[in-house]
Image (cartoon, rainbow, N blue to C red):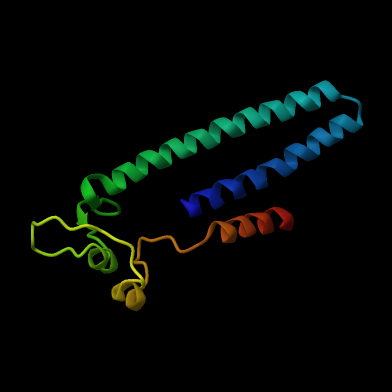
Length: 138
């Protein structure tokens, strides 16, 4: 999801510059109505595009992870659970109920191997800073 956010933000940043420049030129020439119309048309088209992109991406994610499998690029690959998750909840062959409880330290598998290949390790702060750097660089 973080990559999709960055992709869409970069697309917005690339598209907005020329449109804003054209609108500024129209405003300077006294064509306020045309400038506002062009900005409104751009914004409406942009919003439609972003919503459609997220909708398509959502459908893709549902397909990719449907039925507890990884279905892209090949179908029905087993994902399983990270070792630390299994350790945290004391998963074993027993069918007796087990109750999760707060731990004083991370599970040993988490300490040894980290969060796992499908866990997102980039923080929201890192994503925000990267987005701002892209915006300021243009």
